[in-house]
Length: 203
Image (cartoon, rainbow, N blue to C red):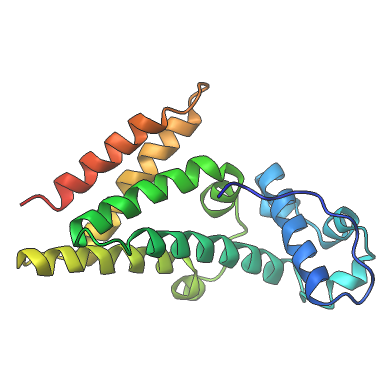
């Protein structure tokens, strides 16, 4: 699936769930375009949707809550796609490989959403909020998949540490590929993702 940050016709006042959806989509567009959380205002979001600013407050109490909701949705979608990719019948190692390929494809197919997750300049929050950030959902998906591989091989290794290293490697692969001013080599990315997985779960 690719990015779907498309401009919609303004919702009628009081449209409930439909209006909230439009607000989230508008905020995602604006965040991806500016690259800075501080540049986002609820007034600008309201203008983008075609509603009055107070209408936004019916769904989100402030900018921080809106940005958190946008971020949560982006991570939820990635985690859902990773778990779906890992449900094949080829065994744990094939599952990790499929997840790695899907991660890279997600980044290439959804550059604005990927930027929302990893490239937007954020307003720093209290350190104690860190455990509640949805980034840990992605790490948990990798950890579970690698733990299954290690169990199948009777390997005594740290799945959490391996998960972090695998994720960091994949993120680096797509970040470098997407930063260059050339058409992305998707086949090359897949080959590098496969090589990373093979090294991580060799044996």
